[in-house]
Length: 357
Image (cartoon, rainbow, N blue to C red; front, side, top):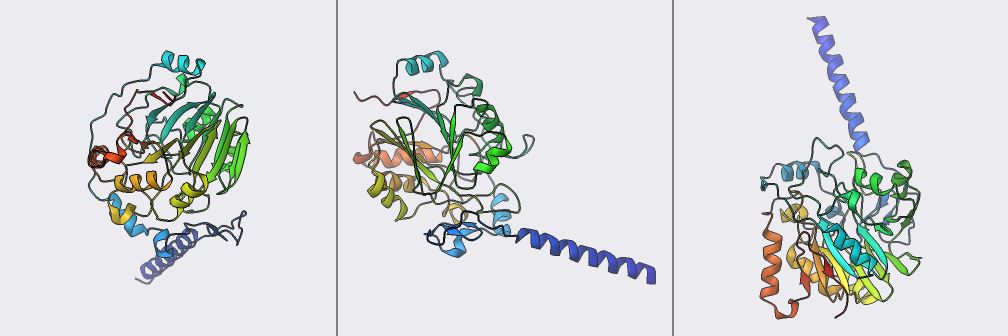
């Protein structure tokens, strides 16, 4: 009996030590090498949303497990209409301006001679591994190998449905493509030996040929591993190519301050790409993912002449029915004459002209 008690005691102590160490790891804080106390979105250990209360910045593990256990829709796989690659190349060679939705938050644009890609994800799953995790139910409208030459790519943040390692490695084979990423993400690209990467903080600007790139705020968060959150920045992007101004929202929740500031200081925009999906349950998603009504608020706040929806119709990440974002946006447009022609729901395989008629 004494030997048994001794074994139980040792096992209990080992478990306590393991749990304690795990707790220390979970609470482990890295030092933010970019920390500037004069910037309201900086912290000594990373970054934060300046217009969210501290209690709302992070979700607990219990909240996460509760959300993950919620029943989700189970859509059938869809065969999307593919882009006509020959038509796409012809439009580029003819210097036509256009935008097309590749899937999720991946938009392909050609504006005034520059070909631009946003948050490219071409993998089957948005996950650290390709045998587990959310699986696409609709496929990219163009194969990654069939893409035209890309001049620049913007990344909004490090979540797996926006920063896809396989896609980045493939696109990173072209050393002339320039990547623009929020603060803290360049070292991730360095590990993949992708060097043509420019890292920016909110409100910082760069110029590449005839393109003016500005890193701007969004309301979101970053996490790419179990033990680290908020250690790299998240952002939206303003791209001015010649006289055409495009705004890419990335992933974001809504507040009544940031987007009005963007509209006042950097708008109006000729076109914006704004998320419309992945917003339920609201108790979990509200601070970080807009619903369709809030997408319209952002469209108005940033003073966009036209906007196109994204971040829907590709992965089941949340609990709303897969067609609900489209139906809600269409309902808002139908019931408000002012929005007709202003907010588009992209269809797969369709190339939308941006040339003024």
